[in-house]
Image (tube, rainbow, N blue to C red; front, side, top):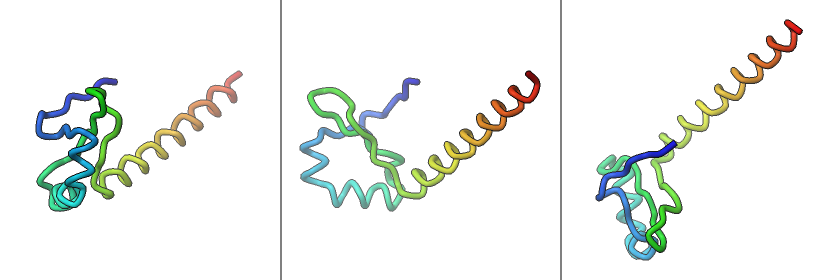
Amino acid sequence: MSVAYKKDEILSASRAARSFGKVLADLKERRKRRIAIAKNNELEAVILPIEDYETMAEAMAVMEHVEIYRLVQERKRK
């Protein structure tokens, strides 16, 4: 899966380190949805507000349960 990032959502690792407090404030106050961190012109990480991360983690857990349920149902039919 490929995600597109806006130019203002990408920061170099060194710039993110120098202005980490501002990065966190921008995320907390919803001035930015996410910040992608680039090192040597390669995207390495994404920083998200904690609420967004927790929502994504919960969605992943639900998807895992759905997949387990699907596998159980498939095996019951065999």
